[in-house]
Image (cartoon, rainbow, N blue to C red):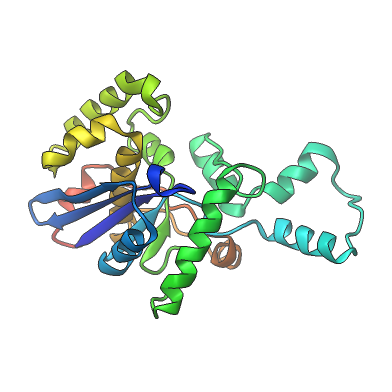
Length: 253
């Protein structure tokens, strides 16, 4: 199995993509690119068996309806919710609320945060994949699955915050120490220095690991009541098994 992880940013410079090859004895980081352009991302999405993208795959349905109604000039004044509660009902997707409840960590709002710029790029990439004939399922049932590296790290009992940016290089190295200890079967090879020097690289690797979890049925999926929203809004795959089980399940993957 080949999984890929994409730490997507609005611009190429902060975008990273990692390819992990899985075998019966473990896994190896086969390729890592920091500063990845659209063509490299599309290659990863086309070549891998499962691709984890660290970016919302859609917008909240109530937000979309709100914007359309406002654009048309027929927005009805809200009567049941006001203030912060009303704004949150527009800003958060169903999967954001579930992820917050499970991990205690709220994802960034694609409707009300700068991550919307990244989501615009992601939407264009998904459209190109679809145009090339590759099925795109925002709920995670296809090749592409939405991931949230910080939540994955927390689910696996690893450091999940405070490692971003050059000023936090010590925390990043601590995360790498703990990751390599917890996953001795993961061979980073010549790419380990790059991972220790870039949080974008680490997030791409974690995204590829989470893609593996999704591929072997060890990540959350939307239930029947959530599927309709997940099909348009996207769905964050949260690991439901241990980090070590990603390798021990190799013969089944």
